[in-house]
Length: 174
Image (cartoon, rainbow, N blue to C red; front, side, top):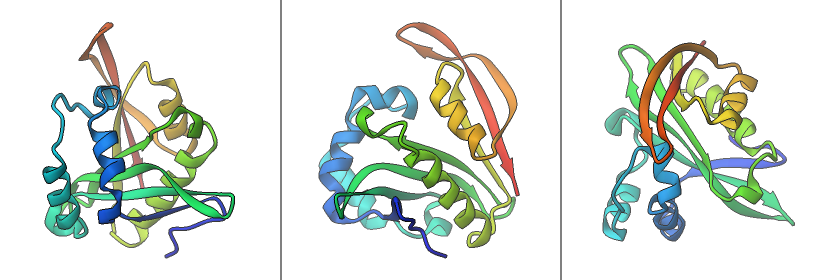
């Protein structure tokens, strides 16, 4: 299983990623999609990085998304499996491309396709799910592009600065 293409690679979180994770996890704009409301300390993130790796023990897995630019790699985001349940062979999925200048370049859909293949072939997951704000049209389109199907709607589910928003439930079944 190769988690690399001509454009991107997925890799494990490394201690050298601490500055990026500290920036990303403490950005209030990211909190609106991650359901966080408090900042993370550098110490908390260091503990997380050191414990990361075994999805069966931690019930989650984060991979960094690196894209090739000018012959070198630039880390542009993360892709996550969470709420992993090996008994029912399912997991939640999340993705973030942090900077707007790195969005709409196909990195997210390519990373999702790699992660889906890895989840189904290596981790033996048979159901992936994702919940997205109904107003997040780019993420909705990206999920549908890689094969996810809408399976439900939670009305007035999330409170945002603009009021209450619906949330769409998506599934991808192997």
